[in-house]
Image (cartoon, rainbow, N blue to C red; front, top):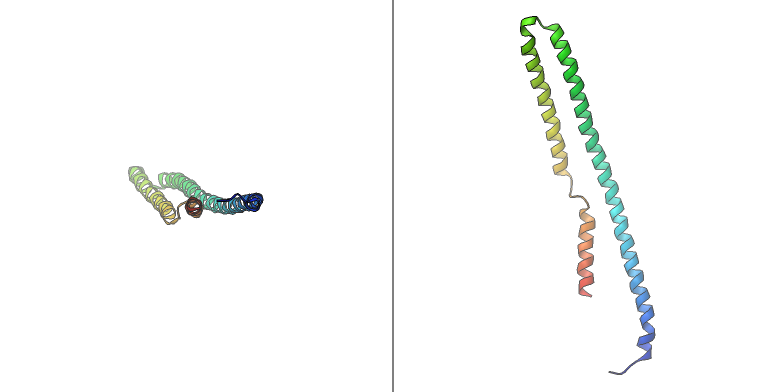
Length: 128
């Protein structure tokens, strides 16, 4: 095997291309990561708003309905009315909980595309 100055002179150019490729690949992955971050933030904000709305509406409804029921019922039926009201609002809260769980179940795994691209990159770089 003979020593060649041409191969030695090509090394800086090859290194420059390799670094350029790695920088471009890192830029693409960071862009994908930032896009997925925005999507996750948007989904999390929606879910938080649904949960908070359900919580506050349930609390106000329970308070108002309880006060109205206590005031409107005759003395001997007030306890029964309060129990029925508590059951109805508990049922509403359960519906909101299951709605939130279904939102979470249908949502894809966070950062799935980024993780997939990183594993592909690791596999490609491992083969070279």
